[in-house]
Image (cartoon, rainbow, N blue to C red; front, top):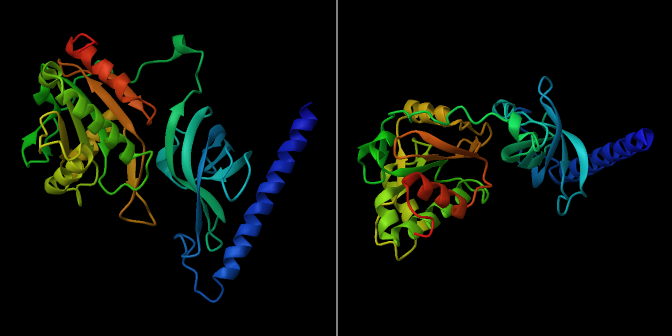
Length: 316
């Protein structure tokens, strides 16, 4: 059986290499005559494909991960292969069992002709079935830091100002183009905000905060317009429940580090960020009650946690 499995893996690897080579030759010919960029950058001929899969093993020293990926429409069938990964920030979270979403980049001008980037950890089931051994996130029970922020109306505040209210916090940047990242977080927060605003009791007891980690471009005014776009035409310019916030680069980094958010500017596209996802629930005492890494949480689930934290009946 072991020999059969080994032979299958070899066939898969050979098939993957063949597909990569064919693809690279194809777009190399298409780009013939054009000067290619430095291998450190992505050339204009590079092709990208969305990838979803599960991490089988990692080789941090050589910056590679073995991933069992789903079918990549228009490119290759599902298989298990090694992928180079250039981003340093992912390695603490990229562990066997983690479910990921990423982009496969093919570029004949680069040192590695293919690699994965823009990686998001969707779920981490590497310790499934070992709940008794799993330690809660280090932030649980800790008082949130008093890091200064500025909301969409230009007013200063800190997360400690929400004493006696339950608060959910997430992180976004306004120009994120990926539907499973900031777009999803903002859609879910605006959905919760509208539901909370329609409940007079919950509106008094619950707050939502989306913090931007792009202070160079996400001004309070731009965040206000961004938020209104998600709240919808019936929002009536009301940010009582949902606040959008930004701060100095150093302050945003402090609060991101506290909640375990990892982000860095894309080396090839300076207007984009490679980042993880983190959503937290804070109790009325200002202490963290729950941390949700990735994007698998639901508005219903987080609302239930907020109402429980605020001491509200779940039927409210």
